[in-house]
Image (cartoon, rainbow over all chains, first blue to last red; front, side):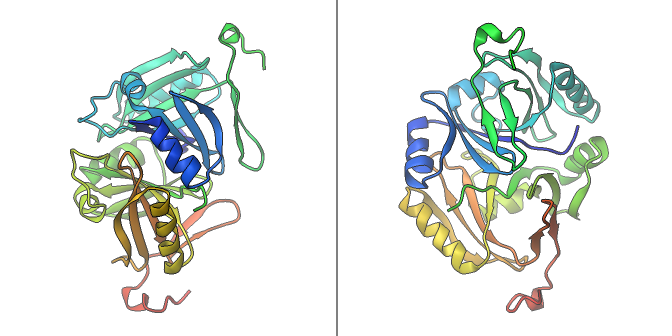
Amino acid sequence: MQPNVDVLTLAVGDLDASRRFYIDGLKWVPTLDVPGEVIFIQIGHGLLLSLYDAEKFAVEADLEPSAVAPVSLGHNVDSIEEVEAVMEQAEAAGATIIAPARRMSWGGCSGYFADPDGFRWEIVFNPGLSVDQDGTVRIEVIDQADTADPAE
Amino acid sequence: MQPNVDVLTLAVGDLDASRRFYIDGLKWVPTLDVPGEVIFIQIGHGLLLSLYDAEKFAVEADLEPSAVAPVSLGHNVDSIEEVEAVMEQAEAAGATIIAPARRMSWGGCSGYFADPDGFRWEIVFNPGLSVDQDGTVRIEVIDQADTADPAE
């Protein structure tokens, strides 16, 4: 597993309040804004901040709100096989597997493991995400009908 | 305030356990390892992961362990005046000031604010930190005697 964080996810209690602060207040420009669900904002070279509805996040990352930080560190790879390989490597290093590599509703695949403190890492293959030479991240929403054979 | 995260800090309960997982297990190379206190690891272009002793972190970020995520997002600027300016801008956007800009034991200055969910942002001027053209981050420990007039 390469030492790379590509997405920093914060689970937020009120996405509209987050939008008022980060978009309206700080004037940051969203890469993708899906009302009621998630806002992505570029916060570095190839790096996204994901403000993600806390209830959806808690289910996805198998997270008790009071037990573990409502945050995850996303690591992008290029195929579901790579997701599986990284999960195996992390487990061998001492990680706890939270969710094995699986197909996700947004058209890609992901798996979760926890580090020694319970911090969630999400290993992701997202066929709709690409990074330009200058580090700009692009996300296109994948048509669910295409997920079996992404048309890219 | 520019949309940039430069350091992702995770408060860890046992820094030796974190070292066994990230350094020994995953074979990641530390940029700086200060036993008993903090390990920095490069996790992207100009981006560091900071594994930071949880007790020290809780005091620094004024954080009740069970109340808010033991994590902070670091945003680097070039002077204490810029720290102060960003803190003012964040407050105007709706942030709660946790700690005003102040001189830190490691030779720089920082201030903390909280976003609508209480997530801590640390606005930092670190005279010992530099980023190469290729995104590699370097940290040198500043001699405390030099902090009044950094010798860079």
